[in-house]
Image 1: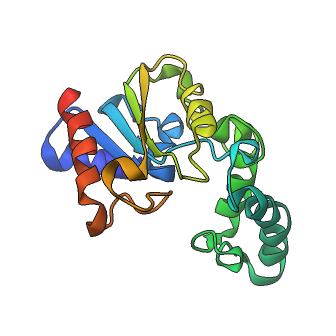
Image 2: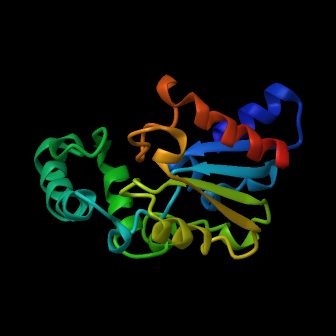
Length: 195
């Protein structure tokens, strides 16, 4: 929300192009200033639904959300994602919301009326391009489609990247922006040019 306002103010633009990785490409439906976003390129953006996970994330994420987060929040005061090797530790409230978001399909709409009290998903008409990799255990095709369905009035498309097609061993959830993966950056640029 604040980043959108900052960018439009800084550039004197009525609208911006939003390029977001993971949560950065997923949360527009909670932003009251969503009309300032012309289009979205969501990289590894998905619902993160436990049902749609693959690989080790399919087993680690339920343990993290249902056991590690509640226990670490109780005893440490924060949600410990590092304990299971699934990212950075999260503030208590963020961990609670993440549990609600990912517990079933639908992502943030699962928290409406609990920890989230404003929902703009249906009001958004900005086109959304979701870019994900075939070896991403979190932003699987199932979970990408699940996220996009929460924006019923936004035209959307999915761009699927196969690591071998780009001469890469892996892309996963986090490698898109590594210098070793620069050839993928043109995919993002092409989506922005198309918008």
